[in-house]
Image (spheres, rainbow, N blue to C red):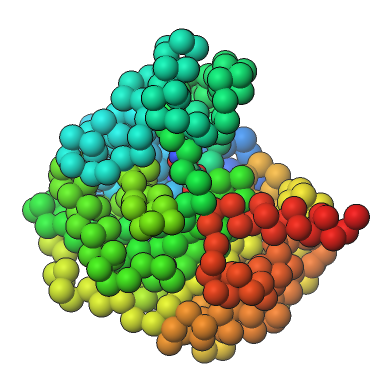
Length: 453
Ligand code: ADP
């Protein structure tokens, strides 16, 4: 096992990893930007090194700064968390060449799954159902129209290198397709440094269901059930739950088998997530694989009792996964609400600032993963996630009741957060029955607007 690990991240995930390390008896090194000097991850780690300015390109995304910090502190491994360099195969290669273990998949895994277009082709070859669409990058408008007409409208243009819900455009006819194609290519270039786009059939009213997988270096691969992430705004997840209310044992087995097939086809190592779209008839389609720990990993931890960060660390250290597929039992239900520093009443506008007063919820079935404290200054430089509120109950209804109770206790002031949004959501009859699709939040917000007029 490692004796010292550097955490190349900030915020709640840096704390989450430090906590796992402490429990495993591993020393930790935090890295921080000038804006994060007073952060909890700096305080909780055994050592801390400033790696640059507030802009992440000058700190958390700076490979030379992070590698230098790792060399100076003489760590054996780096955990990248999520975001920043977590899915950067070049970074993983550099770690390897410096004899530092990258706690995550192999660079090869990342290359095969990082580009969505490449992943689609590979997964189709592996026998997974994929969303009908183009099999290579769309070069021009003639090709775009041909593909769209073949698969039928509506279609979605996606950036091959896309992520974080960005770079997607829905088109209902030839005219909107042509006008969106160039914009999508430009957006892809601006956001991801690569203009490649492809076209997929736009699945109407789908649910987003994803499978957590784990693989070790001996080729042992298993899955930890599903998460339902259909509650999204602008393709970004706001609430996740496990198990999915619409996945029965039979469908879980089919999804799990498909996810394992996908992971095996690339000899996947570490924690990863295979994302699927599920249509109204329970057909599912491979969408993409995330080759990292996900924000929403706690709901899986709650229902399986398996600590995913510790598993990632053990796997990276060369240990075998010490349980089998049959040992993985999903018990009860868990829900996660992402609490963002955003003004829900004002179109989710970012609401940075200083936290003057804070009360965290507690009691049975409540877990709060957060880096904030009274006096903490929320920086405009990074994403707006301030806390993850996770509840666990004997079943979905129980987890919902605990979440409603926990949200009512949660107090963050004076900044605005998404807590009122979640309170509204958790009282909505359709959400309670889980009669929802990925469009649900948009429909809910439109309804609200209509009522306000
Ligand atoms: P990202 O990597 O940016 O998160 P994804 O490919 O995971 O992008 O898609 C994010 C979300 O966009 C999905 O959860 C889903 O709501 C929506 N989406 C993506 N592809 C399709 C599609 N073909 N049909 C309908 N919705 C889609």
